[in-house]
Length: 475
Image (cartoon, rainbow, N blue to C red; front, side, top):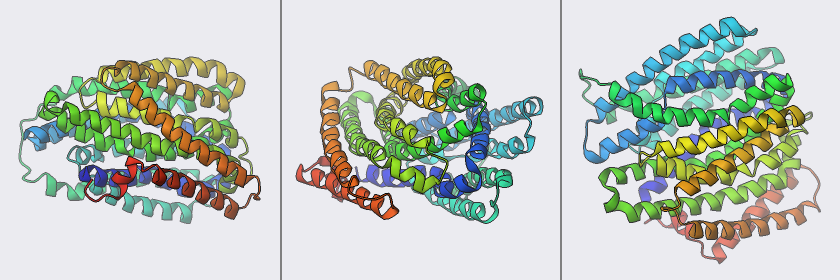
């Protein structure tokens, strides 16, 4: 458990770093670029994401799982790494060619889309899946941290007006590429003695494609929202509002799901050693994941709802009032995604049952697309928010059904009720305090601090097991 805690901390830092540039720069960019320019890039980035998905070909999750399996069995990790890397190179080359054909024929602001291709090219150099597979999360965190600091400095230095949107895209995508390239500096220490290998890429094609299908379905109800908002509303502003509400919730979700990659690697190792031998350990790890997810996600969700009306004007500035109700409603998604991450990423993928993950996210995709068609037309970006919440809930329900023999619904419900009760007490205490304070930054910090203290006190008084994980050096 000590390894899990250390890797959780590093992976949490890594996942936060992925979003740290847009989060730190958001207050500045929302004022400099405005909702319309942010919405313009949001739409472009959604297009790039489709091609990036094809470039990856499902190898991120597949690569992490396969490396973990090979490691547990003493297999040839180097050969496996080179084969999966070769598959990513081929996928990226084909995807990049298709992307350029697309922008030549379909877009007006070609410079923006040409610069954004950096994010697509970065796929080749991304080997974070390998470090996750060997449970070396600190390497990913350190090098990505360096690149994020550089990118943030460049954005604050060179992005000054609305016309500097291309510079923002250049630095944001360039930061991703730099972080991926830096990861290679440490590779020789964990993957020594490079030599010619007889590589067999074909053996990885079908299993990685199976995960690609599930990732494609996920993309349909996470990124397609932005595309549909742009196509239906014809408004960059609506996409800008949606992007800003998503950005904050993604940050919260990242904190909650950071345990996912750590547990997926550990559970994959246990499956590699034999399920029957490690059945009890796997069950306890999954139960711990639910406890940790509920302990963090529910108070975060109600906390976002509590301070949304204060936070949005202070953080984004004037002109973003539409984000407040979107953020409040979208916050519900945090614990829902936390649950689906446990079942899908920590259970189905390590146990090679990605077909169940694919089925569940396909249901979510269908729900999301159908609801988007009707709700975006009537409620614009808010319609996409409502559709996303319902779709994610549908995914989680289907996954619970598939995993009913392995995950105790009774135990999970008890955990949910426990942390919901703690969070409700915290919420209404904060609400009472909020009614007595003005809308300054200082007042918001007081509310947040008091809520954290109240919640922490509840955990201490109830002697919550999470405290043992956090503070006990032996766990």
